[in-house]
Image (tube, rainbow, N blue to C red; front, side):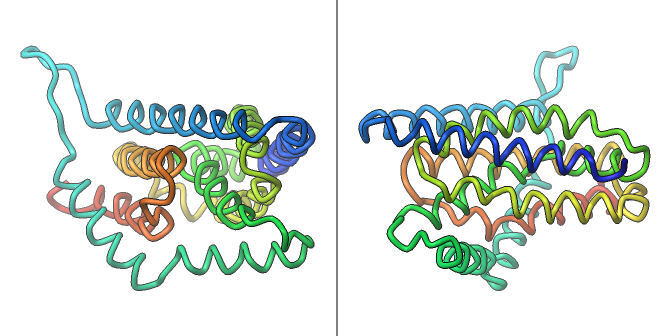
Length: 240
């Protein structure tokens, strides 16, 4: 069944969120705070690991780095484009709307929880590659693996940040669902180089999410999202 992978992923996020919400009610604030820091550090390390994997290569002379120019240009141009579109503000407005619709007006952390968790579980090559494989071959194995990871992440984040995290299932469902439906159109553009660039920049943005979790809102990560699309386009440039 095409689209099953996304349904599994969405279901896993909801289950993880509900478990985290139930257990989080019994966790003291100081434990929630340290849990938030722990999650942030894990996200930081996932971002660093993914970035180093794409940036470094082994040569006869040892380690060599690459992709610096691509990263700098796509991040800079992407940041300007994202700031112009004000993606972060639009996500926050959607979060505010969800907050009202779910009767969560008393939850001051709802919007930040929704935006931060949505970015954490949406950014990355697994979402794109998994959705494409699901859409073309009906193979949901990658999304099933992602679902397990997301369940754990959302479980911990909900326990520390609140129920806004659970609704990250909505953007995941929309994004991965659209990629699944458009899989045959998108697949030719997902070359090895394009996926490498996507994973590279996506890992950098994941690191930024970790920064926000550990040190508070420092980076408008949503406004950097166009950098991922630019990174894919970069792979088709004559100089790439």
